[in-house]
Amino acid sequence: GFDWWFNFGAPNDDFYAGTYAFQFTVTDQVTSCFTKDTSNIFIIAEPSLTANSTASDCEGQPQAELLNLFNVSNNAPSTSGSKFVIRSFNGDTTKSKWGTAFINGHFLKGTPKAGTWLIDCKYTEKGCSDNIQSNLVVNHTPKVSFTTDPKDSAGVNAPYFNTNNQSSIASGENVNYKWYMYYPNNNSISGFAPQLVYPTIDSFYTIALIGTTDKGCADTFTHQVKVGQKTNAISNLDISNIKIDQHFRVMGWEKGSTMRVYDASGKLLGTDKTNQGLDFPTGIYFYQLELQVSKIETVVLSGKMAIASE
Image (cartoon, rainbow, N blue to C red; front, side):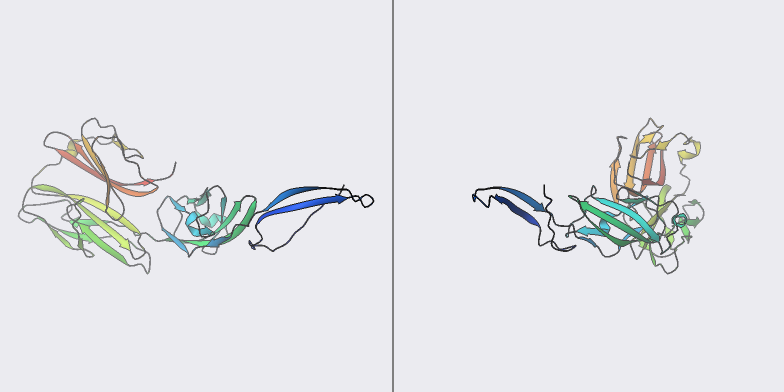
C-alpha cells in the first residue's frame, strides 16, 4: 500500500479553504488499461480570533461576560467553542492574589476585584483553533452612604434634613451624585450634600442617593425619614421572618405587598403587586417593598440584591 499526503498554505491563511476533488488513476503500462477513483477533500478555514478594544465592567458585579473581549471573523465567538483562562491580575500571575475570582464557562465569576484582568481565549471550530489574549478592566464602584440631621424625623414646623454624604470612592475617580427626595419618583437634585426640604405635612419619605462614576459604575443608598407625627407600623412589626428570594418574591408575608425593582441608575425595571416574582439577568439590583399592614398602615423596606446565573 501507499500513503499519500499534501500540504500547502500557512497558519491564518484562509484563501485555500474550500472543497478539492482528488482523482487517483492506476494505469497498466503493458495494456494501457486503467482504473480511477475520485474523492473530495474539504479544507476548513482556521478561525480568525481577534481581541476587541479593552472591555470593561464594574466592581461588585457577581460575574463579568468574557465573550465581549473577542471576535471571530467579526462575530462574537460561540460559547461552546470558547475556552477561557485567567493569565494575570494587574500583571501578577500569582493565583493567590486573584481573590475569589474564577472562570466558569464564559464568565469571570466570584465578584472580581477592580483592576486589569488578562484573559486568554482558545477558540475551536470544526477541529481548527486559534488563541489570543485580551484585557478586561474592572472599574471601581463607589460605596454610597449618607446620614441626615435630624437622623430620621423632623417636625412640620421645620421639615428639612441636612445630609452628610459619607460615600467612599477610589482615588482619582469622579462621582456624580443625585438625590431623590421622593424615591422612587424620578425627580432628583444634584450636589454632594444638599439640604432637603419637605412640605409641612405629616408624611413618610424615602431618600435615595445614587452615585455614578465617569465610567458608569453606580451604587445606591436609601434612608427613610418622616415629617410630623405620622407613625410607622414597622416599629410594631416583626420582620425577621420576611425574606426575599432571587425572583424578588416575598416569603413569610401573607398580606398585600408591592415590590419595585430598580437598576443602579435608579431606573424602574419592574413592579409586582401579586407576589408572582420578577426575573432579571445577572447583576446588582435595588428593591423597594411596600407591605400593607392594614387599610391605613404601610411599611416600606428597601435593600440591594445581587443576582448570579444559576
